[in-house]
Length: 410
Image (tube, rainbow, N blue to C red; front, side):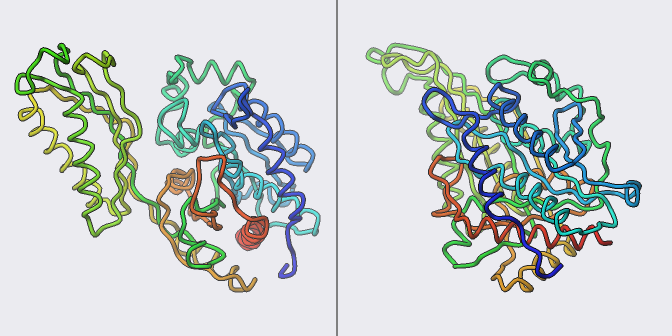
């Protein structure tokens, strides 16, 4: 199997074709979860799975599985390869890479006459991006037992839709209970979404851990009043209080010698009028750190600052936790196997931490898991300008193929 390679033209063709599906009237890629655009991508993926001769299964949360098994290995726990095909709004085309590379690895192994000792499955998990429904990585979280399927299906989206009803509407409310396949191992291939590999001239990343993530929504209540007649010292300005909190987060993260990052990604004022002091400011906070203790310290520091801010700014503040995921350490054996396969193929490789959330962090709860990264040009992602060269895409898929073959031979 050492000389086996994937069909790079077929892989790139699939990525580019899927990248054309789910465009809005402005030409933006908007394949958000359980939407009509998502259905287009799902239908195309299922067709490819069927053309590859795989059994297709869909579970109740809409996760899609292409299963390669036969009578000799059907009773064994499968090797699972996967990721997602949903996108953010105005996305790039490479989020689907892990799914399509998983399909390509299976097709190439089949064509080479490889006989796996256990099934190999490619998975496309629902709502990884979390744009329409929260939390992100929802499909894999439900699959791993971290969120009840009924609760997930009842989730109300940003547009007022209900996830379960939307899955039914687009034809992807499947019959299988999440977790019906218990993986022997899980491997996810992804573009890095960061600048490290490109900057260091390294072909591959063997991802050994993944940052913890804390999402909160902060609501600050002040008093709406006239912008011209209310003296500065007599204001209860929710907008100014929000600005102070945002600066606190940015300054604290920037001054820290740790990998901690902090982001305020959304903000809204009420009544949102140019000549009215804001009575309410609502914003989100995204905190990330690969160390659980440090992540907890950042959460505590923000909470303490907000308590003091409520007094000094004469406002009331409440916080709502939207999501909280602990840091993940991936399976050392699989990480080493990725490095071995890279070395055998003469690719440079380094161990890495993932700064973004991925389905692998959820599946790691129930199966040995790891990830492979390939370079992203300028570290750009979640953006139509994101780009990974075809050679890097093929290299990552070849390593995925080699790792899958080794794991499936156990």
